[in-house]
Amino acid sequence: MQDIHKYLLALLVVVLLFALPFVVNPTAEFGGADGAGSEAIQKQQPDYEPWYTPFWQPPPETESMLFALQAAIGGLIIGYFIGHEMACQEHKGK
Amino acid sequence: MHIMEGFLPAFWCAVWYALSLPFLIYGAWQIKKVFREHPEQKLVLAVSGAFIFVLSSLKLPSVTGSSSHPTGTGLSAILFGFTITSVLAAIVLVFQALLLAHGGITTLGADIFSMGIAGPFVGYYVFKFMRKLKVGLGPTAFTAAVLADWATYLVTSLQLALAYPGDSLLNAYMVFAGVFALTQIPIAIGEGILIWIFFDFLSKSRPKLLKQLLGEKSE
Image (cartoon, rainbow over all chains, first blue to last red; front, side):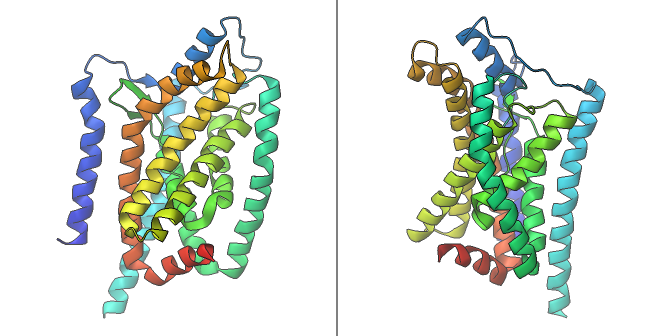
């Protein structure tokens, strides 16, 4: 099997792995585990008050934009590297 | 991994900052050394950081019905060790704390310790140990990345249990691990597969560089 096929197959497994939850658990809300962690704190110690709050919180639209931006920066670098390597190999082959 | 802003008592904020700081300083010095002595490794270092950027920005659904972040630290831990990884993770965590109100300044030390140091520490030594047993590169990278992710969340559970022990530390640990540990399993596996793919690619495109990176650390 060619490498690229192996990688695509592995990526398919990843996609299925993260599609599975919606099949197994269709009614779940998929809230963040970090939020659930804070709820667990308040169960452990009901009188706990966070003593510091973020001084700035982005509106939801900006938040998703910044998350996407973060992924884009990383994706750009990874893509650049893969392209760079492929081009090097091709060059060597000639 | 993010403990929310203000959710760690001041004492523990200080403890985790103090424990993380030496790793960050040593890590920054090591990155400088890579840039100076091994400029050919710069690009791979950037890609290792990029993996942390991409993966920790994703919130992935888990079979338990909640979502959580992968850490992306496995690749950097294997290739560059856990002190350099602590700096790369810190960059991401500062970005998320300041711009996204995800995590926070008060919990930054604790988050750097779990995601940047403890998890990568486990990943690094799992990798070394399995290589010593002559397990192949692919399965070793996969296992190291999975365990680096999982260990991060087990350490977070410990950090929260220490801060909120209630009647018994063990019970508190079970409560917090109950939130994170199961949810994290499929996410860690997914992350492991992605890092395995990249590692396999790297082992074919840059066999010499990979040997150099892995060999240097076994000395």
